[in-house]
Length: 252
Ligand SMILES: [Zn+2]
Ligand SMILES: [Zn+2]
Image (cartoon, rainbow, N blue to C red; front, side, top):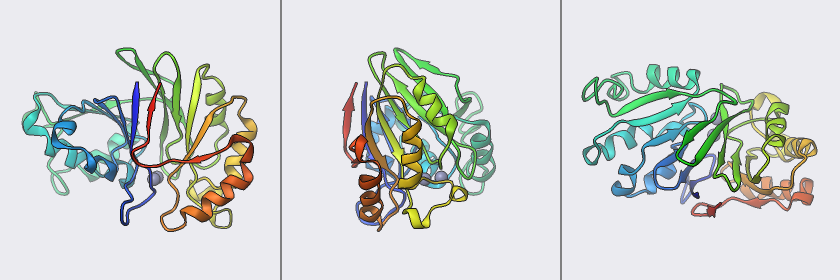
């Protein structure tokens, strides 16, 4: 299994791209602006998008992706997401106003997009790859994902504040090797109500983790990346956290 980071910023500006991970050639985890870096041929190879939640920095490129490579494809793009996320995208995105309703166009039988419901704790098996939705606590319903190649697992927190259930789920993943976790805010700016993590909240979560992992930090607030990361390096030193970068690749 090969995972390429297409985008890992919480916002845009300059070279920043928002969250999207390419798993092998055919699976995306989130479809933020990082998707725009793919060529049309690469977009045409994508059969599955697993969305963590509906916020635009994670879902905004789904409609554009569905359109861009459609002429190269003969099958729908499968968009896997929680019920609430699917409802939000149907109501506010593929509603015939903001974008055509590609769940029934160009034809009901072979639309450009088909939604597939996922549930926390229920894995999706795609060949020898297993994708498990993880519980997280964000300002709207959201899911993290754990990608298991059989040899090792890569877990991604999505957007979340501190969430006991997330850390407990990680403890249950036997072959967990990589953890990509969001830390958006400085300690001074963070509260549980923000739905995001700070260094202090990450340290609290790591206290609950009973695993050795390679720890990567994502979704840093644009313009404050260094300030947030400094706090993470100080408060979570024992895990040697590394800032995630666009273009970074993992093989596992
Ligand atoms: Zn986000
Ligand atoms: Zn969000």
